[in-house]
Length: 151
Image (tube, rainbow, N blue to C red; front, top):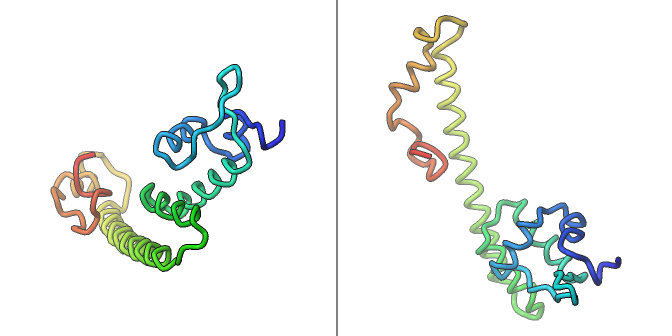
């Protein structure tokens, strides 16, 4: 088959993406609906491959679905001014910088915790286990949804 008539499994294989992810992107409106064969199979074209690759590249940069959706809107209107694209990317860069700071604080906390038990011993005497039991909510405040709370 050519890329003009890919079934969903072939598209998934071509894009190294699970079939369920493709269906999810369709439900979210990120991928346009596929044409249907007489047997009711989804049929994807080259534009689906390119769009899915674009989405996957954005997601690999840790962009949210809303960010991807915004970028796709600009991609679909190539004559529009890209100032909003620049703004979106600037905000995402700030988010990444904030996340790096959070991870560095987390790393420091883990290193401090690791220093509480330098030798193998009985678990009842383990400084790490004791430290974890006594930490309560001492996690760095800026960890957001990634730490410090119940999961």
